[in-house]
Length: 592
Image (cartoon, rainbow, N blue to C red; front, side, top):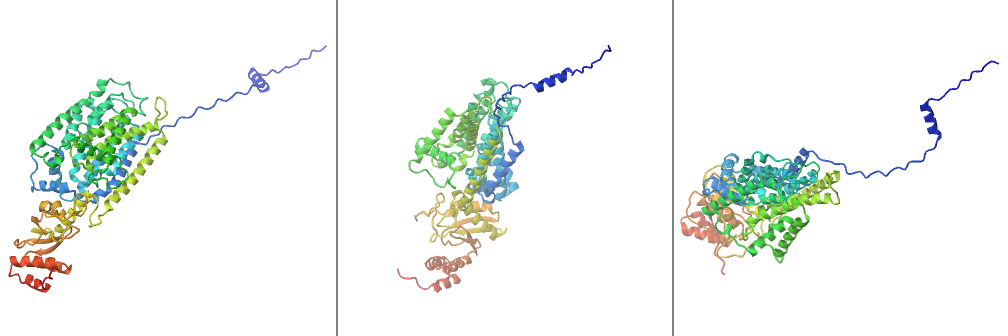
């Protein structure tokens, strides 16, 4: 029997496994729920933060670029031109004689370069504040928000308008520089001051030399140094916390420099008499409480275009606002973090030196304190962003940046609107700005500009007539027309400082005299008469300008005033034929 061969083809092992896996049913696997996705970190580039703050600041505060000098600036120009002596004192030497002796020969008597420099320093301060907020633990969007809120505040308008407020700006510039040098970097590493501590001390010395009111602010940094470095978006990367002594050590030299040098400079001011008189009288008690009420209400005001229009608080406000300030301070101290406490302490430490000055509180006093308030607001923003978060704190995402940008945009638009209203508001009784700062500035601009245009570099002696018979006394602080009295106050005379400011601002004026009625003599002097809006109308040289004035009075229907002036002129000069002819043309006086 023949054998039959049978071939059996076997599947490979891998193929059999595939076959079996396809033929055997497996139980369905249950999918696990996806873990919630954390917000993706997001950060704007540093240059974008700096540029947005700088551009927005220049746009909002552009109003100061077209303004004239403030009243105190005119006194400074008197000193710069030798009409008044510079005070022999080291008190505020940097922002006083040293600064203006350097810039006046370069910039002259035009306000624009002074306003530009103030804006440049203000932008620099805002950027330094952003850097300090980051070093003190604020997240990037919170620091950006704090810098922008400080930079865009309309409350800085008087400080940016007055050239003599350079002390406020310079003191904050050097203070922020000193604190930045003494603070750790954003990653927790030591700052440059650990290697060169003299740099921070030098910056602090320059700060108190510009204005001594910053001498106590480093105490706020000591409060912050009590806590280890733990920024909201850098805590995970920060190195181990250093000891309390190591954190406090860089700040102590700044505080010592500020207190010691500040006391020496204050003593110099007292010795020279610069800190004497009514302007620097000291009073504690109700006056200090009144100043707290005023500064606190101004700091928190978001509605009034001219918050400093009123000289004092009214009603129970002088008790309510201090209570509000203390309540907010306690909330920051109890519920807030280290940055919130440091920011609130900064505000109090910066306003403390001016609290005992009765009735001498001005809006520019808030320039340095508002930087501390901005730091406290940065802490509040981070507290909102991190609500409900667990450690380690998440880095800021897009939402935080969008909220910060929206807040800055809204605040910029609102500040610009209120500043525009402040510039446009006018007094009902006379064509002067309602703003007390702008009012004095505008009076000076009009009168000084009229004299400069009339003389056109032609040297002359000037007599300005402010007629007592037709002038309405206006209080420069309130803008109200006051009742007539024996001793009248003339706004133009106060602004021009009895003519000294006119001589300082118009180099062609050799001498200047202000009179209120006919006065004999001064032949050849240029005669100008003041109008109700403080513009000056030139009448020509004396004595024939007297007749021109009488003709002007008659054209306005002021017959009785013209007759009185002509009679006085004829008593002094009976041979004045033109004046005699004008008096005869008026006819006899009407019987009373």
